[in-house]
Image (tube, rainbow, N blue to C red; front, side):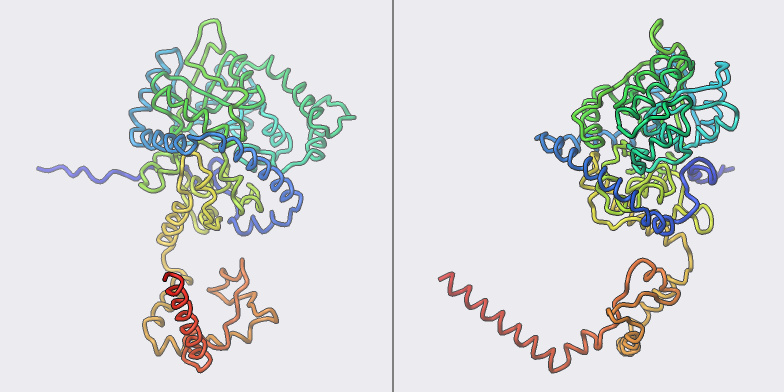
Amino acid sequence: MSTFLGMPATPPRSPYGTGNLRGDRKFPKAAHDELRNEQLRRNLGKATRTIRTKRLGVTGELPDWEQLRDAGSAIKTDTMNRLPELLEQLEQKVTEHGGTVHWARDGAEANEIVARLVRATGSSDVIKVKSMATQEIGLNEHLESIGITPYETDLAELIVQLADDKPSHILVPAIHRNRDEIRQIFLDEIPGVDPDLDNVPAHLAAAARAYLREKFMTTKVAVSGANFGIAETGTLSVVESEGNGRMCLTLPDTLITVMGIEKVLPRYQDLEVFLQLLPRSSTGERMNPYTSMWTGVTPGDGPQDFHLVLLDNGRTAALADTIGREALNCIRCSACLNVCPVYERTGGHAYGSTYPGPIGAVLTPQLAGMDAAEDDPNSSLPYASSLCGACFDACPVKIDIPSMLVELRHQHTEQSGTTAEKLAMKAAAGVMKRPKLFAAAQKAAALGRIAGGRDGTISHLPAPLSGWSDSRDTPAPPKQTFRSWLASAEGAATMSAAAEEGARHTADDHEEDR
């Protein structure tokens, strides 16, 4: 008697319809609307140029910057290769130091775990440190739905929350807002704010500080993310610039940290590499103003009840992809966003995901899939790139984003089945295999000159080629093909003249060499 064990099942992606990993429109349509927002483009252009300049300055001053990038890439690759054992080691160390570890398969489970832990404290409020993981799973929306009020304490996140808006940048969530807009948001949404508040940055920050101070001093529960989790010691780390994170991590009685499983690092010493790579790549600083690290619970100091929620939500599925797993090496520095010509013009909202820009275009499909439903908006993300390669050059851990985008386009094409575009390409391939038929098709295509405008371009092609002309002008066919021009008297004379010129250059070179 034999037993058939079967094949291992493919790990699940983030469930469709949950969290914030999928927009409601495809990228081209969303980008089309965003491109009309001139204020957005000015804000993005100014902010990304400033960060790019600072980043180039602080990375250029390090003679071993490329070696640091190599080290960061090697550590992350090693981490992904033995992720299960490192996560078990992290759980063991956190537990030894008085913390409690929870495992969440997806965003819904993570939301329920956090909600249960908050309810157990009897608190109806939580203060939050900026966290991409909790944005990804829609934690704020879930807590609000059950009567628990989350208060974002990062200034940019607070602006986004008060405006009932969505973040548009990994590092600078309110990058699409200017000072006048922020002033009006504060006047409308912060109780008791000075009605004479102006748009001076220091005054706006003071208004936010006064509002948040009462929350810091009275709220008993905090929720954070984590930049890194150290398997060797059970240490968690958060880096930030405003000090709000330090307040959230030390003042409340209970601290709940939601961390994606890919954020684990093997050794404490690995921080030596990443605490140089991260601030220089993200904010263009030599080090972050605040670097907080904690290991479990310390009696009499800081939160006395610590919970770590380890979030999968499609990460195991990404890990199972031999090519796509490289996206998990991302340390969320946003350097790729700041150099991307597509992101700089469209902004983050067009991507529809918590993770915008080049890394979002590869990470989002890896976590949530891109063919989960008909006309899935995520299927357009791999095409939201010019493949210029600037993101690869800027990535501190050398993620080859352009190659991953091409691979995702290939996967999407394979998943799409028979489409009008695929049939058109198949027909074109059949024509090109037959020289006589190809020559006849070229003559027929020359009639397309009629559709060309005065500028020699065709603005709209009929289906199934309409997708091509939706985003670019198509040159009208020339009067004659290259092959017919080459066979003409004009072509023969031009080629003969070029050959004679080449011979003269060769003779001149020989004369100079004597």
